[in-house]
Image 1 (cartoon, one colour):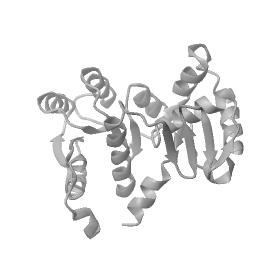
Image 2 (image 1 turned 30 degrees about the vertical axis):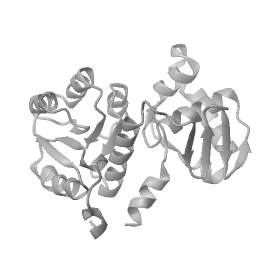
Image 3 (image 1 turned 180 degrees about the vertical axis):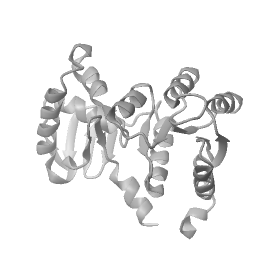
Image 4 (image 1 turned 60 degrees about the vertical axis):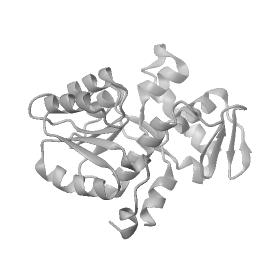
Length: 246
């Protein structure tokens, strides 16, 4: 970490993170890095311990491994989400699309595969905490340069130029922008935009995403990232760029 990471933490950065993983090396690696970034870290090695810690001192965010020794991580996720609305980022070596979809549909805010880049993980944490903090005060205009979405007037601009979208294309983009840097599954997108009767129409969704990317142009269209077999993510590119510049 650079010297800038050791700068005095803001109140936001002093948020408590519960790290749930049964691998000691993960704790040895992640804890000092998270603390250097200004977070307070609680440790849990099992699912039962995670549930106790979360109840004893509710964290601002949970980093959860799915491969726990006493409980399936998916069950732990379900219980954590049922008890509170704490954002959860899954850290797992399970790379099957079905596992990702199950975790995201169960309420995980994000899914990061091991091995992961620490800079990207820190950016994902910042995004999750910012989203949680601002959930009740959504801005009228969402911006991920060069993309801008005016939620009040349902207008989309790329580098200041107005882009004409169909109502469905706009609804897709607005949902992705509201959840920038978070994976939204095919089922979630289809249900939100077309309704629960269309959850199997994945190919239909792909066609709409293709049209959306074309209309946004190369730079903005590239922000709509495909998560193979899972769904889509609107990349908050400035998060990664800011971190890389340190």
